[in-house]
Length: 238
Image (cartoon, rainbow, N blue to C red; front, side, top):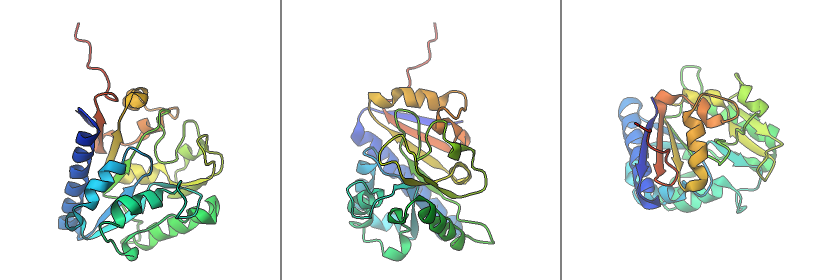
């Protein structure tokens, strides 16, 4: 069952989301000695990242990953890595060895191949890394990471990371984790704000469908935090 929390404003959403990440990191460290967290780009998670960057001690022992990346250099304004570095990773002082950047500048095929190799290299017992929490945004079309409605990548069952060359949202070339990785994560945290996301949240909570990629996440491992504008309407009790 998806856990959904509605907050009155953006600040409250960010505070709740940051608290969720800190708790997931603490539990992972206690149980396995290390936490694996995947970050997404976009405007919605930015405030959450700034709050997390203010308490680096609570995130010690974390390996940082990315859910997706645009195929641009790391210093490009479109880079998800750049946003995460400026808001969280840099201010908190995380060393380069703990930050696993998708090399978007290599292009979709090679960037995806190298990222999959890194996920496998740092796994245990012959298995790839299992994320403790994947922080996700959602598009108005209900896409997550760079998994878009109706895309062939939604049917990928073996690869951990794939290249995207025809994204309907610019830039067209991207790298993204696949649904098997997101579904295997111990938790996914989806953050949404604003009325433009309301229909996407409703679609995510509806029947699973490739037309709404977010609906394909594992609901028993999914936490959704929205502001009131993005929240689904309360059920009509007649």
